[in-house]
Image: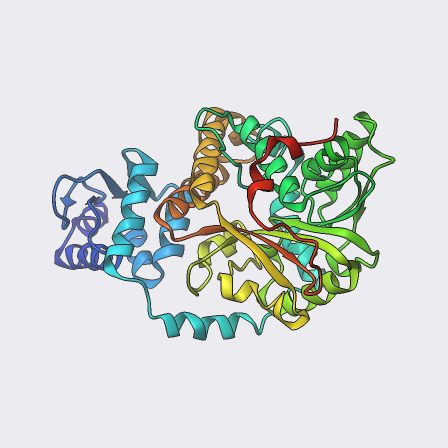
Amino acid sequence: METKTKQALVPNQFDRVAANWICAFIGYPRIAIRLWNGTEYYFGDGVPVGAMEFHTRSALLNLLFSLRVGFGEGYSKGKIDIHGDILEIFNEFSWAFARRGQRSYYLGKLHTLISAIRRNTPVRSKDNVHHHYDLGNEFYRLWLDQNMVYTCAYYEKPGLTLTEAQVAKLDHVCRKLQLQPGQEVIEAGCGWGALSMHMAERYGVNVKAYNISTEQVSYARAEASARGLADRVEFIEADYRKISQRCDVFVSVGMLEHVGLKSYRELGDIVNSCLKPDGLGLIHSIGRSHSVPSDPWITKRIFPGGYVPTLGEITKIFEPHKFSVLDVENLRLHYARTCKEWLENFEAVSDRVREMYNDEFVRAWRLYLAGSSTAFQSGTLQLYQIVFAPGGNNDVPWSREYQYSKETKGHE
């Protein structure tokens, strides 16, 4: 029995063919394939930047059925290991995919139609958010910046720390919205409340912020009370579909990815009903340059119900109500650096996270953060900030100077 087991683990010609197929599908990255007994294959050109080690034959075969899920689950469960700098290796994977050529544009559009069938209802949205954001405030506090901002930072100067870059992002958003004291602002999907409190504290506005994460709303309310902002910022534990107040400014940073393509028209209806004719709005969202299916491992492990839209798909929010799109900025390289810094912070506390959860959780989140950074670095993912206004609003800027002028930075 023991002899048969050892013989079964001896690599054969099929294992080599399987390894070659995996490398060919990715685009022959400069990554060596190492099998369970130390046998190593390399099908790329030049010097390999690292190695992907399979500890069992089943881990190798699982990639043949679903490359992304097979790798994601294999790595999370410790059946696959990466040897070398994880960011350098994942960057090599991303660039190899790009060199191989993207999937058909029309195949991606077909998947978009399929994705549009599934709607994130209020109940389903609550479940999806609970899966990711209600892991516990202590977990996120370990590796986010001190203001608990879980969206793309803005490195307006190269030497900024993560915390400084997150504050710069908050100001960048506020300048784009040209906030004025006394204005009424609605924020949809407010996270731990950093932007809402920043707008109220630095720009003198009144904010109603909506969120369906119990953990985040609880944290935000306590923080607003501690900072003396409870009279100017109201955190409402409710779905964005419950928004009914009128406002001068509508802003959503990092929520659209969770809305679902089928609900974009509904979101547009809500913005149209609440935004005053002379108002301004901003949506900040991860995006793509063209339609591709959602990553099945990400939707399984990290963001159930998530969908990353193209810029064209985002316009489904604006077009039915004839909103004027005033400005589009792509901050994808800023997000690549943000995720890199999150990963470094996460690695520094990984032992603590392992105690809180388990090793599989740590490996899954390492994979998610590293993969996200390299996806932005390679252009697989984008980060869009879109400023818009009702079509008849002519009180809009004639240039972009206001976005960068420090004279408009806060009203302290």
